[in-house]
Image 1 (cartoon, helix red, strand yellow):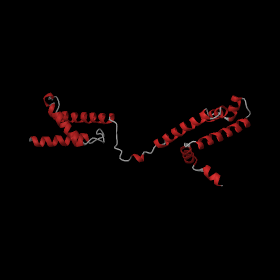
Image 2: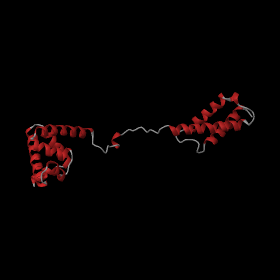
Image 3: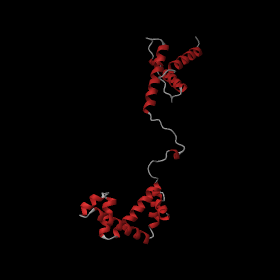
Image 4: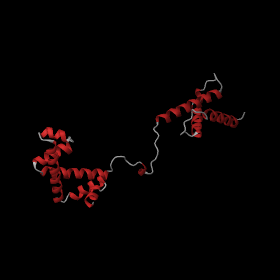
Length: 188
């Protein structure tokens, strides 16, 4: 056998050994075959003649395929994302978040300027999210009286926001959140 024939036969043998499931999908068989040949060439002095050269080379190929499989298994698969719009957030957008924060700050400042009774009822209902019954027990009033005070407090808050220039921001936010329902009620 000539050296070229031996190399070709060994190359075919290695490719056959790597053709099974040992080879990870991301690994190129020719690259792996080249790695095996380099490893065989570097460790040729360590070859002991207890088995045939073909058996030893096949074992090196299988071990290299297993090692490649382990490397691929540990490596996270990452795909290049070209279009970020396909991953739309289920949460609010940064603009919506900023608008909400600004509106909350404006409303908070306006509530701080309201009379104590109105401020107290609005804070209990909207910031502490208490029920009408809970508010009635907390401030020792009847539920209808709480509803009346809450209605008047909301009216005062609306008037205070309309007097300031900040109402445009709050109104835009409310219309987008309700879909313009309040505007359609006034027209009807």
